[in-house]
Amino acid sequence: MNLSSLSFFRKMRSPTRQFAVIGLGRFGRAVCTTLNSLGYEVLAADSDERCVSQALTDQIAAHAVQLDTTQPTALKESGLTEFDTVIVAIGNYVEESIITTLNLKEAGVKNVVAKASSEIHGKLLDRVGADHVVFPEHEMGCELARSLTTPGILDRFEIDPDHSIAEIIVPQAFDQKTIIDLDLRNRYELTLLAVSQDQQPDKFEINPSPVTRLKAGGLMVVIGSNKGLERLPV
Image (cartoon, rainbow, N blue to C red):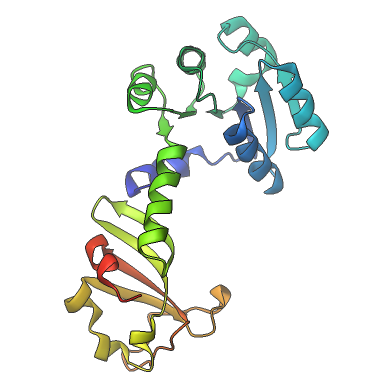
């Protein structure tokens, strides 16, 4: 994810705490489960009655309906088109995904997030009006590769293709060195935003003093060059 997505996600936040999710595969169920656990009201939909029944049994959504979302009339009658934000989690059935997204936009749904299974699928979703397209498999693959090659990075938020904000375990090479000693900006093109010496994320020191000494195994949050992040000692 990069900053170009931020304005969209701010716009997508529902003041009525309601979302609709179409498609109850692994991705759709994960979206429903998370939104529901955060206290949002979720309407789930799928063409497979078994998936709908399972969603109700597992209580991952407040409501679940079986319908063919490629039919505009069915979408309207179900109430899906009245939601400000609808997530189209249909990834493996390209035609169904595209037609559903088109139907939602033509019905006036303000924010449509659509899952894509390939680059071509994503381009087609863009063409029919999807407000935001996600590639979960690609993003998870990238995250796995990063975690394997830079195991000290616990979390990363991409600002653009060349820069990120990252939460990092303080490496042994930085133990007992001050922020001035490390000279992160010149050596790694990174700026230190916060540190937590006890690995407690709720106790970060923001904008720490330049004479603060870091402890190996603690946490630090930095912003800057992806190449610099990759050069940090393990």
